[in-house]
Image 1: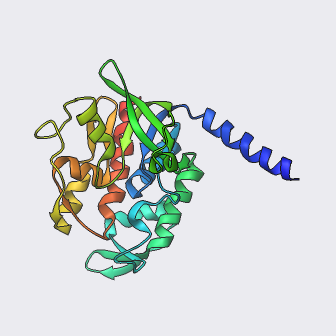
Image 2: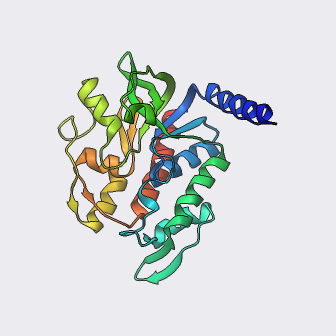
Length: 255
């Protein structure tokens, strides 16, 4: 029995990994915007792999506001949650509350059931550049990185790479600082996140979701950090709408 169970896990996992060494879209970071984009793109027929460095996908959703597991969305973002079967409760004044654990788990389940494959505990330590186009990601196990072990990574090629890493914009940082590319921002580089202003931050999260360089996109707080937008805290409508906007943009680009 032991051999059968262990063998089944090994064979199944490496079949999944091998079949996703070349994808249409590589989403780095399984936060709300990345999961919505992954679900919509997979549902549209694209091969999507999501790489999440933590054990649990879901980004900053789980903890709600200061470990109170409730969050807020706007009424016009609730329809996206409805697509995932996530329950919201009308609050009035254009807002709704919802359980952050239900939201995180619902987004994860929805993306996976649509066909996106999520690789957790996998970090992206570099990007692939071919002839002036971002063409993939360089991956390794996150525990390897955290233990500072000298272990070489492997490569996943992709037609589109999404930075959904949140506040640090880790993938765009690599493109700007290591590859030396000029991205679509006011300075050609990363402006950095401003302090909190919920209303403006929600607006610009969606506005700043864009293609930054051939093959490279940013969503959610990663997009806001690149363009110098404000942070917004435990309200998630902008994140959800960012993911949906991104999916439409990438689908159009990859036609």
